[in-house]
Length: 210
Image 1 (cartoon, rainbow, N blue to C red):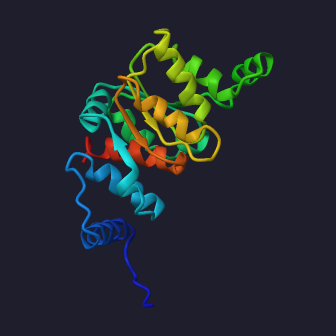
Image 2: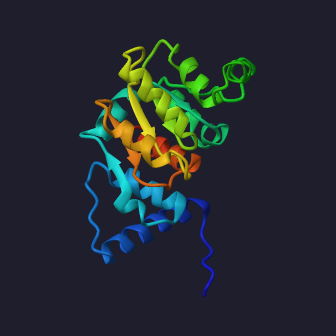
């Protein structure tokens, strides 16, 4: 195969051109409002299965972007997802990204209670005094905790991005979130990951700041 010599800014443009052509060749037409989010997920993963499994609640993209434009914060369940989010661009919208998983108090409380740090992280995030978009790419227990708080009306997230990857409780946790009235973007099935969670956040942010 021939190596193409492209400038950095040209590589992403060419990648999205290839994604668009491949989807067209497969006869896949993405909903206009969801198109750039799903394409960025495919760009991050090189996996076209996401064209079929990405699931959006009604008006999900518009709702998430409205929250971001008004300065909503983002909370992730891994420092990897946190590092992947364009925090400088998010800050231009008045938002901040957080991950509490490595906090000493979170680790201590989780050990004392015999629960995952993800559970305690969600509780800590619920204390943020502004709307929060949760971007969960690793821990299904984070989604389960959010679901429990929603059901008991102890905390209502503004938006949930639920894309944990794995085999234990992953599918069930995603389905639980899709049963709530909370707006969401979820990837159905076992696939996902911190990189996917960050990609979704960035896709939403980039469309607001061009």
